[in-house]
Image (cartoon, rainbow, N blue to C red; front, side, top):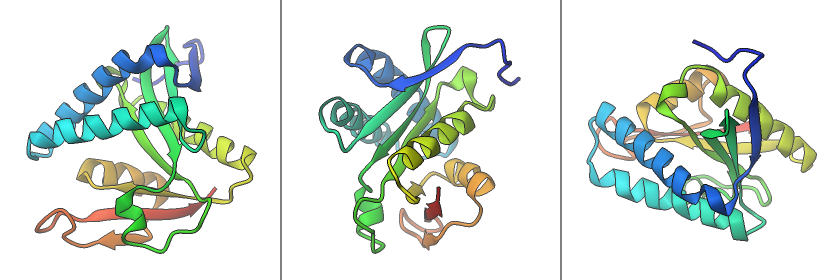
Length: 176
C-alpha cells in the first residue's frame, strides 16, 4: 500500500503539544526494531530518551530541527536536522556546519508507503534552503542500514564490529 495523491500529508516543525504522541511513536517503533533485530530490551529506553532529547532540543535550540509528517491530523513520521551525533563525530573528521539527518521514524501502520522518502526529500530541500551542500547520516540497526543503502548507496564509512561481533555501524557523507 502506498500513499495516494488524495491523502493529505503535511510536514511541519515539531510543537510542544506533540511531545506525548512522539514519545509513543518512538517507543512503539523502537520496541518493534529491538524485537525484530533481537537486541537488548534496555536499548529501547536509551534510544527513546535520546529521541525525546532531540524533540526538546528542537523546541528550544535553533541548531536542531525536528519535523513531523501528519496524515489525517495524526503524526505518522519524523525526521531531524541536527549536529552530528557522537558516533559520527568521534569516528570521522566532521566539517563544521554540516548537519546530520536523523531521527527518521515512521509509525508502524504507515511503513513501506513512501513516507520516509517524502520526509527525506523534504529535508534535502531544507538543507538547500540553508545553503548546505552535504549532510551526514548514520545507522546502527541492520534494517535501517539496508533501507539507507538502497536509498543512498554504499556507506562512506563502515565501523566494523562497532556494536559487537558482526554488528557494524554505517555512516554516509552525501551531497544534497
